[in-house]
Length: 108
Image 1 (cartoon, rainbow, N blue to C red):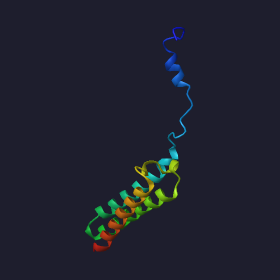
Image 2: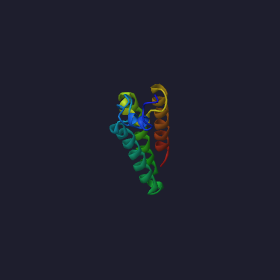
Image 3: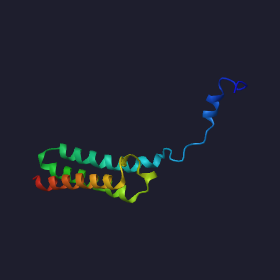
Image 4: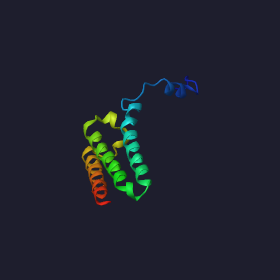
């Protein structure tokens, strides 16, 4: 250990192989699709009270799409949509999406 240069630790870190569970850029796609759908729903609802129901419907469908993506996609492609176990994530997205859709049906 005394024979190693002082910078040996830094160079060995630089040449390590990537981790098996590393970041995949494609894992951002489901999250960006859901965020885009919710943003589109908010934008439609922002146009006025006449469009609030349509905007809430778009946002609710986007949340249900998030539940479907979390259920169907493998863990390495889910990305930011997974925060807990699969069952609790799907249940949370489904309840939120259904609640927003019910709200959309109640709005004029």
